Length: 453
Image (cartoon, rainbow, N blue to C red; front, side, top):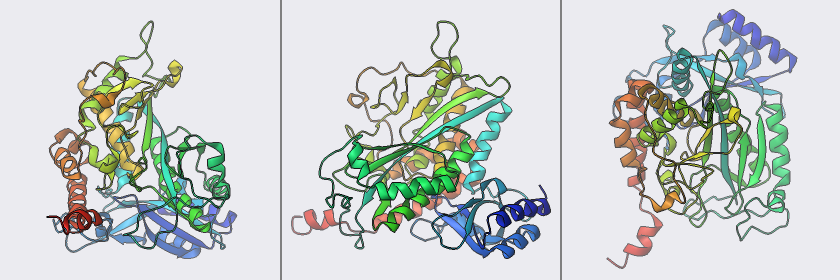
């Protein structure tokens, strides 16, 4: 698509919606929205003249705002061009002025994609499926907590006050009235998601106090990653409007369960539209499905850093914690890392339950599909489905961030799929974040070590 035709697409849309400002954003390594805000006319001109740019170092910025010292980005910090994707433009409904947001792809001046851009990483994996005549379909499920406003990071988070003027003090799994406590927030969330073409499905209360889950309808992996990326911002803004926080931390409250991003995956033949995971005759599952499971079992521990990207992520993955500790698979078994729901053959799918809600949705989906693809390519046979609780079995997932970093660094097959440049930068960013964490003295250390050792 030429820059002129891209401008024409945008111009038609922004004029129709009377847009006065445009947020042009990219999701960074951690899934944080970064970019520029422009008046509409300047945005259209920048699209036509390809003058919308950001420094390359944005892709190496840590969650703490630092830059790794590993030299993963050229020290001259050149500009990269942003190419806004016309299919991604949406209204931003919480502003008074008519405002749009558009997600951009990043390219160098010679037109080659920036290998660190997470949309590009996901597209790399999807192209490999396309070459095999296959079409993945995904459906994320995203958990999160509402909390009171917290202005002191040393102070633990607490459940907020709802419509009853009382905070939750007990577990309310699937409680309808417990969800209704936050109806004013969710009314905005549903209205804003409709305005932004974010296709959310069911809402339910999870096990934690003021912990909820939103399910997305199944669809194209890149589109669902875009929607999940945008939804996080929608929810935070809606919560702030009503005087509370929404957080996607994997384990925000010590005494409550963690928050996950479960990813359901099915696989379809591009020519026939048939779900290739479904078995034939008396077989419940196809060999492709079993090989996909085998790939997840073998490689997900090596991709753990993309599913559990922060030091806090590993606090969630504890035995008997509602989060998995290994990569066993089972039918309707929520203790296993890989759950296969009961379904009609045409809906045969696997649910990856390992990723935390704090994961970058582009990378969590890319990692799931990449590990499954390696299973298809190598025809990896899975273990037998686990019977009973998988918590009684060994913990085989990395338990700390350094373990996950080592496993990713040692996996040549994943490096080839994601790209050597991306893996090198991702590891550098995560090392830098972990080193920043290691410099912090926690309240636990002050409480238990100050006067006792």
